[in-house]
Length: 271
Image (cartoon, helix red, strand yellow):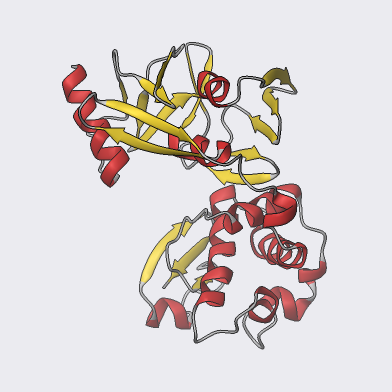
């Protein structure tokens, strides 16, 4: 069983290949941090191609002075230069004010919080790799934890991105909000569209909330979260450049002329 899991885990860490089951436990597999085996309170697990580890033993190994407290239904971790917030069930964790996307959410196992090892490593400023000889997950400390959100996020970009997300998808699930933000950022990166978030949003004739004024409504909290998740790489619709609500636009130009990508909530997305 250990050999089978080790092969599956290696494929997930290296190539992101799918496992034939939803969750697999790695009996006896080790987490190694800076050449030292870490005593884990819960075995390594894989959910839907993603390798999960119990966060606290890894944090302690990289930040021996770290402290953790349970506040408002979430774990709050503090260490020099590091603030972590991890809440069961959420599709993101917060590290130094950065919003890091977890498609399968924060998991729990044996009463312990489990998060993707690569996302945790990014938050802690560590590198993660697979040791094919010892069948171990290896983390190596970097120069420090993730850069703070106050530095990484441009205030005006968060402002306008959260406003368009709220105006277009304020009543949609988080993944649908992220998808709207993805469309805006995909357009920014595409030479056929303007090169800034503000210019993309206010390009003539593109977004209804600009013409009806709802772009100026105060965004709800989840729309702000979605904007930051997008800016930190969360993506639920790939390279989509257009979206419509089929209920109100059943025969839109995008649906007739562009490749279909996905439907999330009330919106259909097209590349």
